[in-house]
Image (cartoon, rainbow, N blue to C red; front, side, top):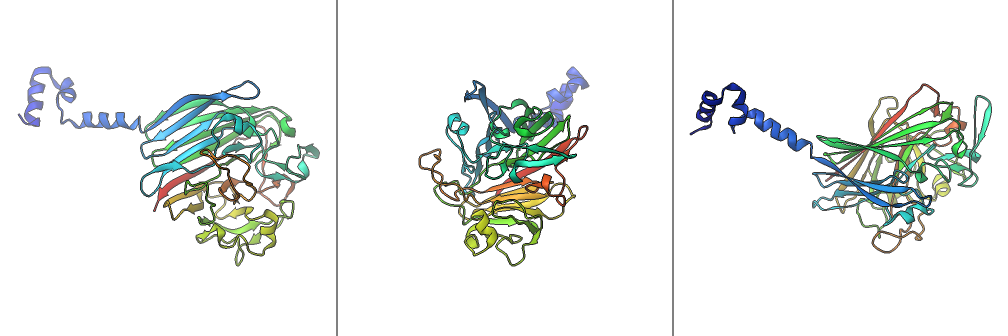
Length: 393
C-alpha cells in the first residue's frame, strides 16, 4: 500500500487528529525529527577539575559540536584550557597552549587561556585619575600595572550557568569584583558568555555594570598554534590584521600617545604575511616589544562586529578569523615564553610557540585623553563581543 493510501486508510479509522502520527511520509513528523536532532548539535558536559589553593572547588565544562570542535573551560580564571578543531584532513587537535592540571594554572604563568580584567593590557605606573581622584594599582609589570593586577580576573573563581539548544551551547560565567579590588573603584558585576556554535565558531560576550565610576577593558588571552604542534614556533603562520594604524609604544610598552601609519613598516599585515617575515627587522618598535607585542587600530570603528584579523597555518590548513566590535587588537607573538613551562605531553613551551589576538581598547587609555574612553558609569551597560571562527583551506 503506498503512502497516500495508508494516509486515507488511517484517516478513515482514527480521524484527522491522528493523521500526523499514522503517516510515515508526513512532513510534520519529518520536521519534528529534524527539530529533535538540532537540540543535540552542541552539548555541554561538566566535570570536577580540582580544588584551588583557597579551597574552592573548580569545575571544567566541555562544549562539543558535531563538526569536530571542542572547547574546555574551567571556572578558575574562566580559562580556555583546551580548544580542539579539525585540520584539512579532518583530524581534531588542540590549538591553544594549556596545562595538564589545575595546580599549574594557579602558579605564575603568562595568562594562558584566561579572562583578563578589570583592565586588559598596561596602565602606566599603575595610576589613573577619575574626576580628579587618583587611583593606584599594583605594579606587576615594572613599572606598570598589567592585565588587572596580580590577582586579576585570571585568578578568581567564576560561577556558571549553562544554556543549550539547536545550533549552539553557552556557558555564562559571573564574577562580582568588589570596590577597590586590585585598586579599581566600584563594585563591578561581570558576565562573560562563551558560546560554541555548530559552524566551528566560538563567541565571547563580555558584559559589566558598576555602582561607581570606574574603568573596564576585558579580553581573552588564549595562545594559538594552529599547527597543533607546540614543539614548533608560529613564525610560518600567515597573519592578516585589518588596520591602517598602530599604537606605538615606548621602551616600557606604554603608548606614546600618537598613532602611526603601518605602511612600509614591519607592522603592515593588511595583506597576509608570515609572522617571521619581518619579526627580526631592525625597527625600534620591534626592539621595544622583543617582537610583536602591540595594539593595532582596527579599521571601520563604530560599525559593530566586523573582521579584525586572521591566522592561517599552511601545514594543517587551519584558518582562524577574529571578528569584534572593539577598537583595537593586541597581536602578541609569544616573545616572553622562555622554555620553563611544561607542555601537556612533555617538553616545555619555547619562545614564540604561541600567539595571541586580544581584542580590546588601547593600552593605558585611562591616561590618554585622545584614545577611546574605557570609563564605565553607574547605570551604563558595558557590552562587547568577539568571535573566533575556525575553518580549513
